[in-house]
Length: 195
Image 1 (cartoon, rainbow, N blue to C red):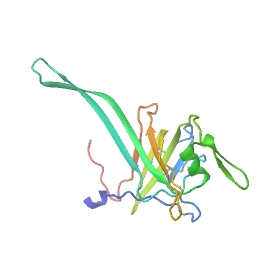
Image 2 (cartoon, rainbow, N blue to C red):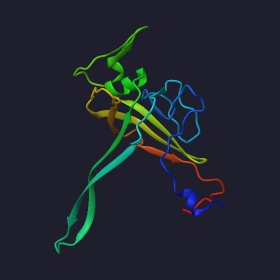
Image 3 (cartoon, rainbow, N blue to C red):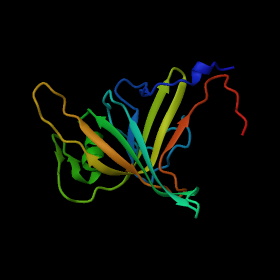
């Protein structure tokens, strides 16, 4: 039986076993086959985004509820009028996949000798995003079926400082109405809870 403390997990990334691959943050086309658990291999179109900063991954949600009152001014119903989610992270690798994640895949090209980034007012296409995490032997996976690039942090080019690529995504609803999936393995020996 799993101990109660086995369910207290940290948000550490699951690094790839390949020393030449970072392998914990990925972007891919929205048409890719997305995982529905923590262990399924990713679609071959998945692009490794390289290192994410020590700030990790943040997920924020916001709900707006309108309360309906009766004649006696008692609250009798609460209607959800707005719901949004935001996912934020900062890439610190200037690889082609990382640059595509930040500037849009449409705005990054490469030749044998150079990478070219174009900054413009063109629309940036939505992508699917996957983040792999692991704490001890427990895996977690965050899957965003369709994430729109909502904002980009400023780029500061300074001697002695890294040049981070700060990204904020707006997860959009998939055909099932879901915006984000978080899959978590059960610790070894965990017993299924009743429903």
